[in-house]
Length: 185
Image (cartoon, rainbow, N blue to C red; front, side, top):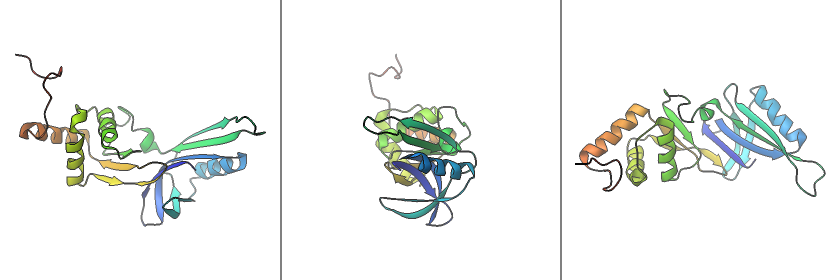
């Protein structure tokens, strides 16, 4: 497994999985694909993760492929499984969403993904302020990750727009002079 994103479910030893990426032989990939199709639980271990029981909600999106590597007789199999929630995080995928699962905790990435996801009018210069607002309102939390630093951001388009409006009114954030967004006299 080279990548995984999960959030704790009911206890510390079980989690709801949003993404897994697995490389292996025919049998290994087929076993994971079968577990996914049967909505079975299976174990996840990795750096910093000790024997975590994971499961996907019904009907994850599953993609399989083969990679031919020079010098190997058989191709390497690859499987990626994505939860419905993560698959619908693209622009307009679920306009009524109340949260977003993101694969990176970098401030610029968070702001960019929320801008695309919810159609927010934001500028990259606001990333520090936006991160402080998310933390202050306890709207961001780290998720379990292998090969990435995922986060969960809670909020709706309306709530994010309200925070941006509040920041603009109070002068905490602003539109830089010389941009095409400023008012012309």
